Structures are given as structure tokens and as C-alpha cells.
Amino acid sequence: MKQNQFLKLDFPLIITCLALLTIGLIAVYSATHTFGLEETNYFKKQLSIAFGAVALMFLSAFLPFRWLNRFSYVIYGLSIFLLILVLFTGSRGFGAERWLIFGPLKLQPSELAKLATILAVANFVSKPQIDINRLKHLLIAVGLIIIPALLIARQPDLGTSLVFLALCLPLLFWAGLNWFYLFIIITPFISMILSFNFYAFLAWMILIIAILIFSARKPYILIGIFLLHIIMGLMTPILWNQLKPYQQKRILTFMSPEDDPKGAGYQIIQSKVAIGSGGIWGKGFLEGSQTQLRFLPAQHTDFIFSVIGEEWGFMGVSIIICLFLVLLLYLIYLAGLVRSLFSSLTIIGITTVFFFHIVINIGMSVGLAPVTGLPLPFISYGGSFLIMVFLMIGVVLNVSLNRFMV
Image (tube, rainbow, N blue to C red):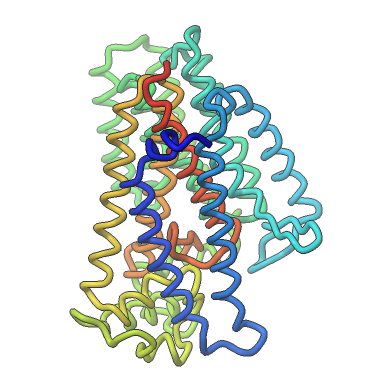
């Protein structure tokens, strides 16, 4: 490695990520140091994985830039194969088959699929002959996202599958998709949500009709879109019944966890108690009662934000949120700076994954989102996720080094 290449690395991005990682390691130690003998290695495992993840970040930063584009479909195909394989041979955890075990290694294919899908969609959409506003090309791009989402939902892992659906809008918008196609993609999901209330659904259908008439499209297109919304509304009860009972409970109780304080609402209640008890400055490192007495479920993974809120208070969580905000805004800045459409779309896809994880994880910790099991980037315990987070950052660093390449 040439010294001048190393000096060209995006150090503001690296420092931000390492700061978040350091906070995460401190929180993991606090959340797990009172565990039983079999679990005392959580911090050591996370620390060793962190060293490997950071090394992988630097390695991927200096890979030949064109490899990212050239091998994107290969990586995507491998990820799809692994997602199919996990359905038949996967290791079960929390009621889902999510891991593949290769000797001492434990791999969660859905994490690889996130980056693989971003690269594949960016590769396809950035080709000169592709017009994202042609229906054929749009369906192919959406299909690349839907396929892994469906396979992951089948595990079942609804939370992670939603990450892929979240990729649709930002990637396609950044690629230049016009407002009408964006309307077609977004509104059916709104129809599904509002179909639980007849009057809300009726008012929504009237608004849909007005927008369709304003669009001045061909009548058969307008009728087809309207029927799509009706069908989505009618399918909602069927899709709802496909969810596992625990998934239904999580959705029903996140707005009112007090209705089931010892069941589905327990996690949210304990999380809110932990965060609220932290006050402005927190109770201090290793001094959180909810954390140290282990009243808080999944405190080293899904609810690690609550650990930080209890021990470091409002100031502690404010620092984390500011670091995440700096990270996201800087990634968007880089996406607008690079010349290559493939590179720009890749950064936007990675930004979307981070944003969705951050918003949902913090949201469920404070009771504003259902419990989905999505970890907090850089901070939550988890090997596959931490490695993939730093691999994504390594890809961004690679793009940043080659920002002026077309």
C-alpha cells in the first residue's frame, strides 16, 4: 500500500465510525459483565470481531474500484443462494432460521444480502442503456430488491426484510424515477395500513382517484392502479394472518404496551423505564439498575440504546444521535460528490440501510416503533452485523478514494 493512498482515506468518516464502535464496546461490556459464566465472553468476542471488522474495512477500501461493479451480480447470486440454503439447513434462533454454521463460523446470510442487493441494483440502474422510467427496467430493479426480501421474510425475519423494502424508494428516486412511479410504489403500502379502518380507507381512495385524474394518464392505466389499491386493501387480512403470533403481538402492543405488561409489552416498558430513569446525566457507568439487574431483555443487542440512555442519560444518547446524524449527512454529501452513478447509488443504498436501522432501533427503544429485532449500527452486539457494517463503510471509503472516476 502506498503511503499517499492511505493518507487519502476519508478520515472524518473513519473517526466517526470508530467513535461509535468505541461507545458500542463500552455499552456491550456494561450490558454483559454481570451475565453467567457462559456469557462473560460477549465483550471479548465483540472486541475481537471489531478488530477483524476494522481490518476488513481497510482491506475493502483498497480493493480495485472496478471490482465492485464487475462482481456485483456474482455477490448477489451468492447471497441469494445462501438465503435459499438457510431455509433448509439454517440454525434456528428466536423462532427463525437465520444462520448458517460452518465449523466455528456462524454466518447470517441476510447481512451479506443487504450489500449485495445494493451493488446489484446500482450496477443495473447505472448502465447507459437502462431507463429507470421504463416499466420493464423498473420492474427488474424492484425485482432485485423483492427477491431477497421475500426469502428473508420466509425465515421468518420480518424486520430485516423491511430493510430491503426501504431500499426501493431512495435508490430509485436517486436514479431519477419520476413522481408517478414513486406514487405507484409508495401508495399501495399506505392502502394496506389504512384498510384496517373503513372510513380512513374510503377517504384515501377518494384522494387516490383525484391524484390519478390529475396525472392525466391513459384510462386503462388509471383503472389498473386503482384496482391495485383495492386489491391491496382486500389482501391485508390475508397478509396479517401470515404473520407469526409474536409478530402480530409486537405490532398491536407497541403503541400501548401497558395492555400486555408481562407479555408483548414487557420489552418496551422496561426500555422506556431504563431510558427515563437516566435523566440528564445518567446513573453512571455500570450503575444502571435496569441493566445490571437484567430487567431489560436483549440489552446487549436490540435494546442497547436503552442501556446507554440509563447509564449516560440524555447527554449520552444526544452524543450518539449527533454522531449518527453526522455520519448520515456526510454519506449523502459523498453521494452527491462522486461522478459515477454506480458509486453514488451504492452510497445512497448504504445510507438507507444505516438510516433504517438507526430509526427503527431507537424508535422501538422509546416505544415509537414495533420491536423488530433490528440492531443499532456499530453499537449492538453481533458478529455478522458488525462485520457487514464495516464492510459497507469500507466500500464507501473505496468510492471516496476513487470519487472522480466515471
